[in-house]
Image 1 (cartoon, rainbow, N blue to C red):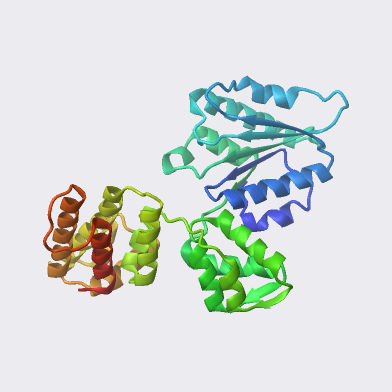
Image 2: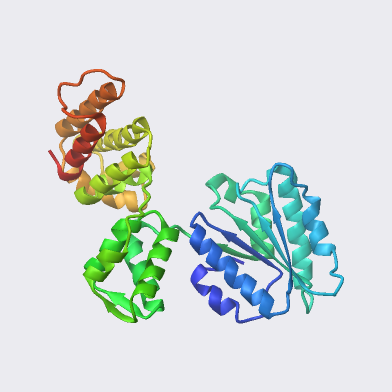
Length: 346
């Protein structure tokens, strides 16, 4: 069965299932979910613990052996299988299917001798269709935890503050979000720091400003959100952050250029009389990105988008050490100027 992460607490009030799978790229939330299962397992008498990590030399027979071996003291066992890559391989896939079948049989009994927690990163679309994934979903409790996106971050911070009996004005929460974006573990630590420094109650902006460090980590493939959404301040922070983190400038330019090319294709199609909805389906644009496209297209004409693509070509020359008369300063500054033009409109 699949279980939402916010329903885990209620689920754990009952006797544990034999098998749990936690899949997420949000390491903090995955760790917290696994910790809750571990704590419940200890409370329900699973006092022995064995941890297996799938590495190059891992033998899949160890998993079955762990579930079959009996403790010298007759203790019930918690087994943890960690698959950091999310790719068990052919042998691993077969072993996981066999293990899932064994767990299904165990679930039919009154008492479980063991509980297994399997942790995985978020699986890509192709891997999600694999037989071993389906087997685990059917045999156990499958918990997939989504990333906390930037738009969701203020609400997440507010919930965490409330859990330690603190609160803050929206602009103060946004200040925290700007400084922890893309780094949820650091966000958790900064919120805990506020709990240690200040008593329960409402926090002032000054208290937050003095305490919260800038620990944001930016994803180059999230630049499009700021650029398409017209969020110039966030775009500037992201470009600066990527530069400071040593991100490869050609990759950042490629991400910006690809978004400009997509806008250009959409604008060209609209100008030729085609419906935007049809074009979005054709170019496989959906979800949050789809919602950002229409306002971005309203800010630009075909001419301005063509000019933006030409400027991207000039920045590419700068990266390669060639002169680009249209820009002054370095290539990072030129990239920021280009991104701001797309975000604000020419």
